[in-house]
Length: 195
Image (cartoon, rainbow, N blue to C red; front, side, top):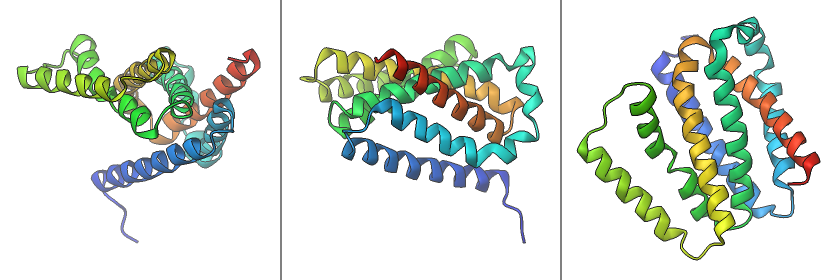
């Protein structure tokens, strides 16, 4: 059997992630009676089980001092997912998804600030238009929903920016497995605090 190239594996993972995100968003919106902490926990548990074997090959590296981007990524991503689930249960799925999908705009800003990447004038203009468009979509939703949704967006941007550094050192299995653990812990901690 022929092994898939890195490009095709990346494409396959990207498509699988997109499909999974769409299904989870629909499930969260339709099952609005299920607590967002529970949904975050279940998503984490599924990833934990699915990536346990691939992650176990390189698990020792997570304790190294140079693993801080992985820990930043997992913490920010766990909180971002929790914010997204909370937001999607309190507004239209399109508005919640639009707010979360603003994350690449902020990834550009963070990459310029922390990874020394360049931002062009055209990118700045496109970022302004994107933010203005999503702000227009969200007009009329409660302020707390907007704050939590945009907080989730910023946390996702931090997660994606630190993922770039993490992915250079750790395999997909390790990155997703650690994220899954953090999602379960975050959901349990926040669930106990009754937030």
